[in-house]
Image (cartoon, rainbow, N blue to C red; front, side):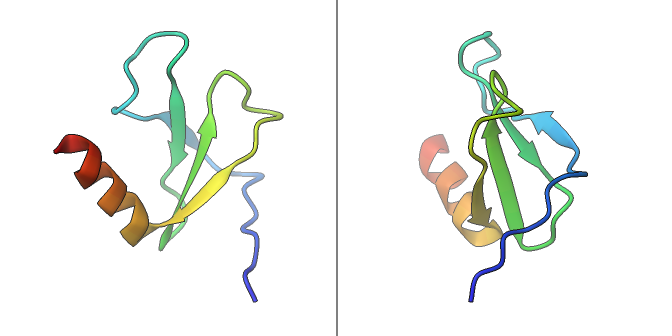
Length: 66
């Protein structure tokens, strides 16, 4: 069974991979071992949070770098 992590106290930071513009911002939280929660910074209170495994997130970042 998959558990939904409690993200109520998560500390969010704007991803260094966002373009920096007002319209293309992604926030990530580094507080959770083994997972990387990701959300839309334009709608922090009502946008869904995507939760990736740390391995999947690393693979994703490697793919976009290449």
